[in-house]
Image 1 (cartoon, rainbow, N blue to C red):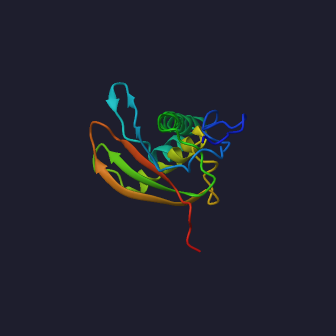
Image 2 (cartoon, rainbow, N blue to C red):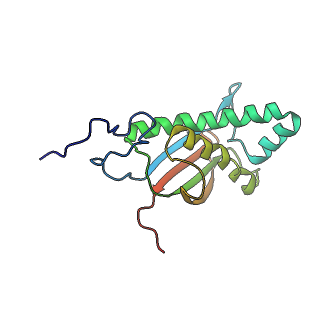
Image 3 (cartoon, rainbow, N blue to C red):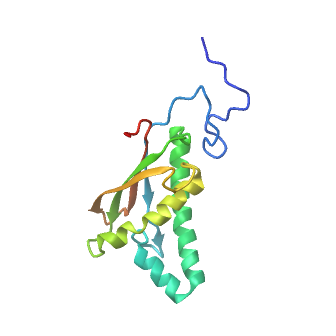
Length: 166
């Protein structure tokens, strides 16, 4: 027998599952790749914290533009991945796992990992998680940095945590 679903249940549509449908199963981990942009035909790495600070020091509007640009890219890839996977926003905390793909090994790991700001803001903007506060994120794990000259960016995995150890 099929479960009756309220007429107003959204099944992950709209703001990507902001309303939880009782007939829907719990969210599975979601994995997707955020590709760094090509600017002027040249493959660029994902923006680092140093890139953002430099832009802010040049002009605060330039810094804001950089943040909006990279947040928008992250939101587009996150939104598309969520639609394809039928992702619904979990009402539990999540762990985030990130594997950074860099053009070369020149940048310091701490500067690379500072790009998580744009990734998190994009994930929230796309509606995959409610907020990027500790209330909604249990941990952020930077698993690895790999060299990938052709396709730099970030592999992101969002893992809902249904049972937390006390």
